[in-house]
Amino acid sequence: MTISNAVIGQSGGPTCAINATLAGVIDALAKSKKIDKIYGMINGINGILSDNLKVLNSIFDNRENLKLLKLTPSSYLGSCRFKMPDLNEETDVYEKVFDVLKKHNITYFFYIGGNDSMDTVMKLNDYSKKFNKGVTVMGIPKTIDNDLYGTDHCPGFGSAAKYVATSVAEIARDAYCYLVDSVTIVEIMGRNAGFLTAAAALARCEKLCAPDLIYLPEHPFDLINFLNDVKAKIAQRKNVIVAVSEGIKNKDGVYIAAASDIFENDKFGHAQLGGAAKTLENIVKKEIGCKCRSVEINVLQRAASHFPSKTDLDESFKIGKKAVTYAMGGVSGEMMIFKRADADNYKIEIGSMDIKLIANKEKKMPNDFINARGNDVTKAFIDYARPLIMGEEKIITKNGLPVHLVLE
Image (cartoon, rainbow, N blue to C red; front, side, top):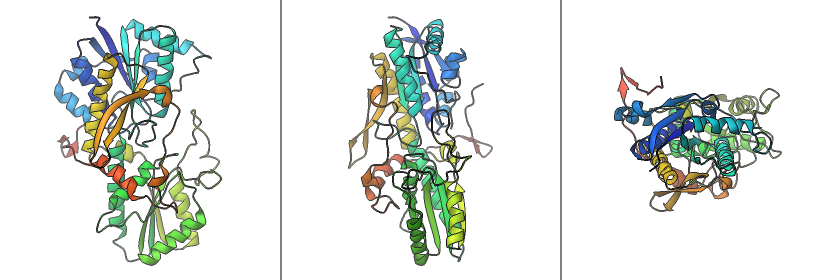
């Protein structure tokens, strides 16, 4: 049996479950007879390009560290946002990557990330095959936006959804203290996919109707309709809670928060967003005249690990382990996916899909998840999302605060 080494990287926006996936990969690799050293690339693909790799074996020989890693938020190995060049235009970067892999006898490459990370997986796999490099390249999904194509849901979404729903419920309880007409507008992440904003609806229960209104990027945002919706809700109850996606756009596709300093694009061509709730706050104050405040949850929705979904963490760990099983079985150039096996009784199966069917595509909320007026979600979405936030993990604490594993 040929013994070689493996490398793992994390890329893109972090989540509170991305390290659970990393833990799953490490656990499976440590038990494999085909693997000697397990390397972690520091700051994603940049770690390969700079030959900045960390041997992880000795760290995780201690099973307590593996347990703690699963409960640690953000990217343990660090992250990056690096766009691999077109394979036909520039080969120097690829040659450097595979020179480093060869130097360390690495034949298994695992990359945990979102849309842009899967583009990297596709390109590296194409290069490996084209030039017979013999490196197995596997993608493992991660994103709180839940917008990766091909998978029922993404690791990280369930915990972020749980945090959003919990936060909206707490914001509503705060607003309900006062007997004055008020509007609270909560801005939630999501450039083009509204799954996370829609998750605010999970806060609703027998004694809580918040959020009263939900606006998603998949449905054109009409300002007049919005103001009428808010006025109608204020007539029913004094305190109105509104959930809006950072990426809501008007019928012309222009972001509501668009301004000269906000509308610049990042290096991937994505508009830099933020300020949708603040924009609407100012409009409500001017047009309706009631008390209004905006709340931008921002990075808290992806960094909070004190109340994660047990379902999310368990599934994230399992999909990491399964990625190793598939790679050792000869699968390359694919991304691991979740498939919902039973719609009525939640059950998930783990499989994989050709990365070419996934990279540079974006999953959005299906029409049957959004009501006709575009200001709320349907029962179909609640039925889809509810199982993903179930269960609580016992958090390890010290001196009254959560303990996190930090790479030294």
